[in-house]
Length: 575
Image (spheres, rainbow, N blue to C red):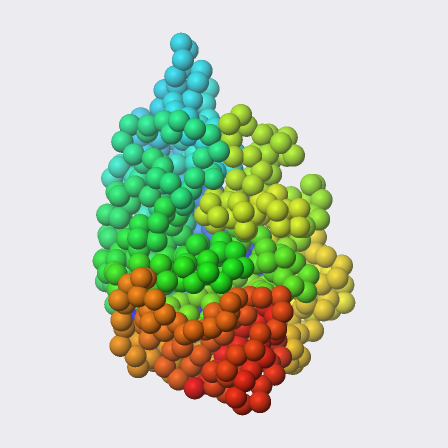
């Protein structure tokens, strides 16, 4: 791939503890990932993103980091990380790792120094005196994404800010040692050979001056829809520009990916300006309901916003923080049909795409996990978990906020009784076999797997032309082979980029994409030599054939002149 490989790359997210276990302790690890890399190479993705494997007490699945330069023994050691990177590169796969700059673990040496009263140590974090006669009230009314107040009081009376769990104290990025430390951390992993970083909470490192009150509760539901003093402050962009300079200094296609929640597509596009990060997840697409008008609006507005700064749009349907889209789209056969169709739609759009582990298998959300098995810190801070906080986001806050506010309606609560918590999308993968743990490892699995997953395993689906796995493999192979599906900037597509604006009606272009007239409930767009149809209706629809069918999420009937699109389906056409 060229230096701009990321513009149309398909990147596979590995949630390390749930991917593959090599040592029998029930937890996935780096060696397990390395041993399963051939699956990703055969799938046809361009890169793999690894969730945190650093030293951590695991209060939030590794997003509470105690040592950014060391591998937690739960996942292996530094030699395992090095071996994984080398093995991935040998298979033509790039490797992206998580970096968590908004907060550390409470076990980080810096925070321990802060609690111990080491002079100057608290200045690296956001410690403040409380309000009230005796400082018994939090410094402001901010709420944790996981529910309850965003402040915890220490024995000497001060309070520290944690936008997530109390075990995740927020750093103060105005302190010069913080910026210097993270530049050193990035260099450490770049020198080891990683190809980039997914920046956790990329919108959160800078807070509004004075830490002003918000004045209302249920703040997690505002994330991604309204301005907030703790997220998406303009000051974060200076940090990202400095990181872009560092990435560019390596000169070989190293990238930064923003997990950023912004109130508008235009605000999100600021994170991918030419001198900032390379990609930013499009959570509006993830949260979009199964409605053609809503989908088209999100696609148009997203492409327009990123085109305005010369960046690709980065599409995503699922991740480790939201209910899996098979379940979001209704569950059962209908949910799977829609999920398969949505995957083909996503992979046909201009830009890059992320695939969350297990979506290529059509895995649903696990909706019946026993309380005793749950690990999500949002559950512990919810009423069901026994630690619900007054004024907090409560159950559902984590899933909603981690994906953007739209997840409250589409991606979190309301999907087969789900509560917005995240363990159900993190259940370990089924690889082979008739009973749990389905080849996940030689022992059990850290979260229980459903008894009916045998037919969803990699082994069961391999070679079955009707399986979701083979659909993904075929789609990714065609995406590479068909010139019209490449991004013009990557050298694969031949169409000049145009964007006359979202009000241009049916002739709206974006990187060679054009909407065409279609019946109600159907979306039809073309790219050079290629067409894509999406039927969102629960019944079949007839229309003139756009071309020769090359791939469909469900069987298509055509006589060469007309085509009968199955319900809840997506089809690719050669023109």
